[in-house]
Image 1 (cartoon, each protein chain N blue to C red):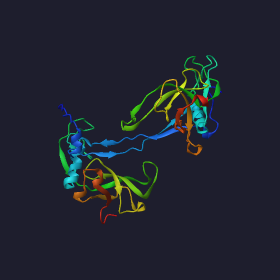
Image 2: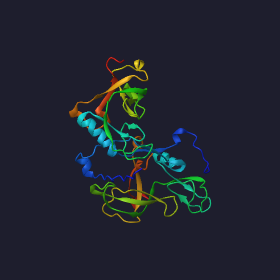
Image 3: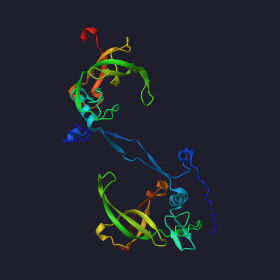
Length: 170
Length: 161
């Protein structure tokens, strides 16, 4: 049998756009459901109820938020739910002038890592700051502004943002 | 509570739901391109032949699946065929009910050793039998796009049903 070498066929964008090649397109209905798991599942339910909750480690006594079912320091199971405050301290922040899909923002968003009161030092969550300009600084005391209960869905966005706390409010 | 904690209430099992925006694009390949262009431009059905194995490929292949020889013998074949098997489909790919059930069949083209999966129409399911002679109904030429849907459906050959 004779050997036959097929010519490679390269298709470029223009071949499709200018109709040089026949093709079919379709949009798969690609839905997904990501299981939140035990710890984050409870965390989200508590957010819906307007509360922050953490988990503590029986070995190192750390209180962790977001909660997790094992301690990544000691590799042991965490064993207690710990209710936390909805106040905290700004550990770091940024001014963000574009959205995640690179659309320019007129007014910058201010994402921050907020150390939550009642959790161990350095334990915090990423959220947005509001009502802060000017005077935004690291170490600023902040409090969660919750959405109205009927608008909460069991999501981190059940907190609308964190606003500065005046010393008189402490 | 331990790592073996089990969820006891269905409402405790939370999940994030979302859509992945993806789009698929299919090209029919070198042989498929020629096959669909012939239907689009002249309504002809083309097949390839392996003379050594005496096999007529429908849809056409570039190589013989029996002896792996390169196939460059292209022939126009009669588009008439017969029902090899069929089924009645009531749901779409997402399991949603179709407005009307559709009949799908594997139609073997008589002059070939292969065939096409396509719709049957102008016939009721109870009147279909295996081996029933059928013929394709094509879209008008200006509507044809070089797609399998340039064939609207197969129908019983007039007078044969």
